[in-house]
Image (tube, rainbow over all chains, first blue to last red; front, side, top):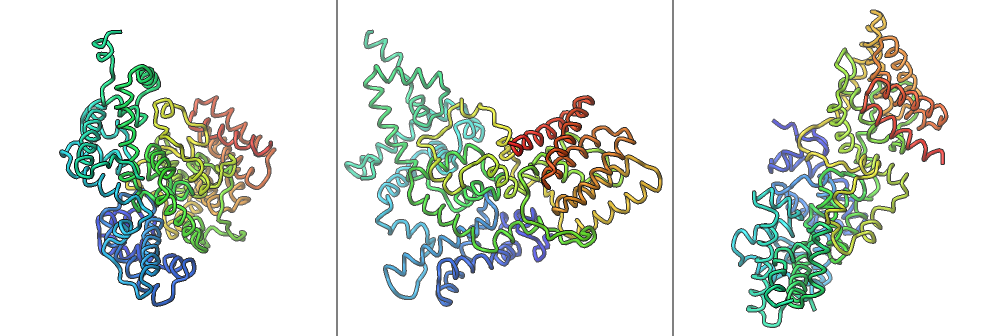
Length: 193
Length: 369
């Protein structure tokens, strides 16, 4: 169906194939982005050949993982380069701490974030934990609003409910999360410090 | 006021949350704010909700890889159709309060400036099709500001269907072509218009311009976009519906087909056919930055359209002639062609053409200043 071997990065079929997680399409995307990935790893971040090849392997894995989830919000190239930047960041952070050959972590960016004391990890964890305990509809509204970056109107349209209902569900969700958080971590109130 | 009345007037928690999220329209917002002034209980509730919302925004609103990529694409003008204006504003507002995401955006912006990437990314702007590159300069990877999206709409429309007796583009075709142009040529176009409007560099814009609160109130949403905004950031269909740009082989074959159509039309005395074929060739040359050759074909198209009494075609040809002349610095002559196009468009009630000519003239006006 898709002659990926000839498709360019801006080829509609390639984008569709990538979104569908089609193996040929994903390989083609990686192939097309390879020169720039290499440039980022070796020229911009100055990785050694050995480290760079390790990170490159992680980038490939990251792109494969991301393929089926791609929403076509960005260009494929920028998306892939972002994955590469993340992997370099994971690598340099790991190297700083361990000073030895890299052993990549699963889902690097997220786990690395948790390990970084400069991040507001406690907040993030407790809020996510509270979010996960919400009833389905409340969680859905919170997800669409915060993670999806959608407006009340867009959420209302998507869920087939009134805009006012979105607001009240969100208010209930926030009250519930506050309650969950204060019962689980006494003193926590969503404040970061 | 009795306690009962005061409580009855209290806004619901939903309205307070909507205020926190700037989702109320300005009248409602003023009313709720006025209530908060006088009701301590609601003030406390509001402040608790605002605190929770801030924490949730920071913890949950972090931008994922794709959103970061989309933000960088849009601020650099590389690909602008992927995010709605609302999502873009929200993402920028998040950046204002999240160092972690901001660092990621800055790193990606730098990484995307890797040497060679611009050429790769704009590679398809350069069409090394020898069939229609006749003694021309090396193509330049830049469209000047005057070649705005509306004009590209014409370029693309004729490049795709303007020859071989194809029907004239309808308003809808033009819109689709324009959207395609924006999607495919987003980088060049957005950069050109940003350059022109004195916009701040994208990476600075992303950092400094991010609003402290989300600009999502109804007023902001209802504000009609300025001309350039309208051109640069239309609400586009997801990039999954139409692929307008052909590959190089197709460009080459279109050029060859248009040339043969032109020869045939002239031989048969078919002025309308000649006009369309000339416009196609002009569009291909224009796309390839072959300005003088493009101007020649546009002139030929305008003259043939006049002979055929194809007035809309003539408007398009004159408009594009004006655009290409402006690009090579022939401003006075460009103005003359554009004014002629505008006048003719008004006379024949060709509103799309009128708008395009108007936009070109406005851009020219800025040039002259």
